[in-house]
Amino acid sequence: MSRTTEMVLGILGGLFGFGGAFFALFMGAVDESFNGTSELSGLGTSAFVFSILAITGGILVKFKPKLGGWLMLISGVAILISISLFGVVPALFLIAAGLMGLIRKEKKQTEAAA
Image (cartoon, rainbow, N blue to C red; front, top):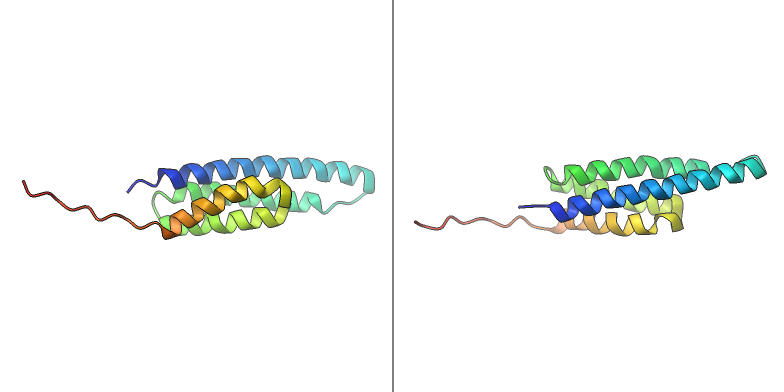
């Protein structure tokens, strides 16, 4: 069975996660230049790591759907926690793709008698 939908949603969620992570890193650098310290830089770094994990899960869902689904589901929740508002769109894509990877059943193919 083709799992193209899960793969595309996972990769898009990971790419949007990269965008949110880079924006959070940028805002953390600006905050650090004014205040001397910032938690946002560390949270942006964790979102960057989870975005890599999400893209890995998106690719892996073609071969091992349960493992890829779990990776995307965990990444979506972690990105949402890490960068909150910047991570809403990636989290929506990743949680949907992760649930589809976990819940969706394989269709049994029956051979037609010739």
